Amino acid sequence: MRILLFTGKGGVGKTTVAAATATLAAKRCLKTLVVSTDTAHSLADALGVRPSEVPVEAAPGLYLQQVDTQRSLERHWGELQKYARNVFSELGLDEITSEEITVLPGAEEIIALLELREQARTGRWDVIVVDCAPTAETLRLLALPEALDWHVNRLLPIGRRVLKAVSPVIRHVAKVTVPEGEVISAGERLHQGLLEIRELLTGDDASVRLVLTPEAVVVAEARRTLTSLSLYGYRVDAVIANRVFPAEGADEWRRAWVEAQAKHLTEVHESFAPLPVLTVPYLPAEPVGPAALAEVAEELYGTTDPFARPSVEPPMRITADELSLALPLADRDDVDLARKGDELIVTAAPYRRVIALPSSLARRTISSAALRDGRLRVRFEAGGAK
Image (cartoon, rainbow, N blue to C red):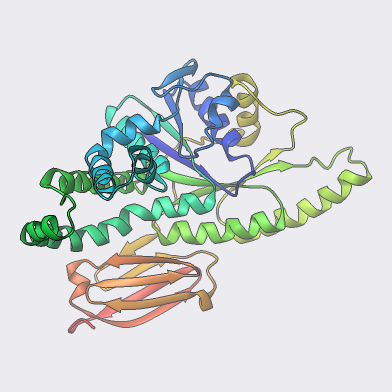
């Protein structure tokens, strides 16, 4: 099963590109599901069909799913939400206010990923296409499973013991309900689900495609996004330049745009090499519906196979004496490395990843670390950990 994620700065046309790619997959007789982690839910509009909370056929072999957040919220972490509502009610908040407060920030995006996991488990699909939220939300979302794993592994075992010891005191003094075992178990199930999502999206059959338009601000953000996705372990296998003005027949006004875009496209090819840079021309009309989207995909991919397993190596590699992590386009001044026990803390600009070292390296000291040719290499030698 092939999984393709599309992300980019808001407004660059990633939904159109994702829908077009899904349409092409179905046209090539691959049973395809297209879903969205973007709360705007524009996919149904692009495909010209009514949204549905269960996969609905938008074209032969192509299915669209728009997640029902409320129902999925109750299914995936109903115990957590119910407990939180009860606590707020005990503190004197009315039912409606308690309900609103317990809708967690980012819940819709997280639930969409949990639904993606459920669909992947069915074995029903040859291709799953994911229309991700704009870049910043996507990066926070993709970093969540590993970050939550770090906290849960440390806090939940302690939390169970502490709650058992102090719950009578809390009930007596604070006059609020203490979470029972099923509530903590719900949190553990959510944690495990997010870990499975990470394994799915960083696996050998998954990759991210960056969508941009040839504009200075957009290209700059796409460069940072490539670095950040690699930091978190996600493969990027292509860059898609959308809304490119054709050079032929340009009048004076369009000629200025053609020249400006050509300059930015040159930068894109140079910056993102060796990744392929695919282009979509600026179309005379908005592509809506499977037929129009299929034409966009044919123009975009040509004779290539966009559904082949990605040839890009995983960003992180671990050998007997080295951990290396791809950080393409990273500025050396923005990269920082720290060691804390059996963990490496890697920072690239505003993003940070905590990497749990395997036992073979956790027992050894760091002998050297350097960022060269877009890859951070950390070498270890025998000895006690520092």
